[in-house]
Length: 325
Image 1 (tube, rainbow, N blue to C red):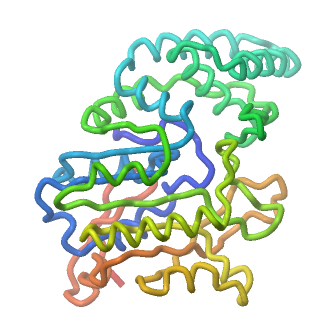
Image 2 (cartoon, rainbow, N blue to C red):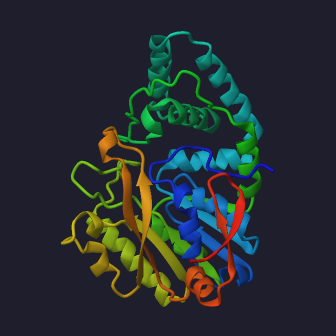
Image 3 (tube, rainbow, N blue to C red):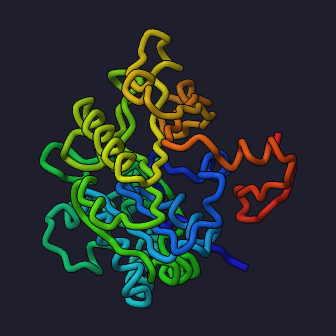
């Protein structure tokens, strides 16, 4: 049976880390009654779609992103899936009938210019977003200081732009999701009772040339990282739980303890993640990332202590059971 999954490519997507993220959830999360799940930086939504399928006790979910074009995509997938499928099929057919790379590049650039006019209706805007995401270089979403999408042509000859099954499955799950567009702190108003926040913000760059936080024209610099930490303090003081992902600066530079100092009051774990989006193949590979959370007992800790079997999420969207190490 097909499962819901991200409908777009996204830099820093969490599909490859789902297993490790799941292991770091609160030990009793699956038993929370009427749980609320909040993602203030939803991005590609890999964690969102996993959580909604894995934990039926999540009765209410809230997602947010400052990128209005992205949140419009989520709303259209949720509310108008059939109209979107028809529109995507049309642009896919038009693109895939082009015989030369030159013709496909011209089609891409015309679509990019149209998208950057910023006066499209939601269906066309989302169609262009999907198309550019599937045909630009490496599926990278990047804008310039004026907020204009500027990723170059990706040279794909026969990309799948329309995936009706995924759109319909995602639409079903998104029916119980509230979609916000704005600053991450605005999500606090939706926290009540058993609430878990998962933060996947723009990562702090490991070098001057490795920044991939150009998802919007607003920079997410160290001041923003500090403001996010203070928001985590607010969540903690209110009695809610949070988990946060970010780059591991210390893994790249032993002297860089930015996050270790910033989140010293909380639990900090390190996980391995592969980085695939880099023009220089030699710079792709495995790096550590940090996971911060404000609770001590995680699923991993409990399963290790009790030698129980833990359901793990794998890339093929199948569940395999194995003993926790």
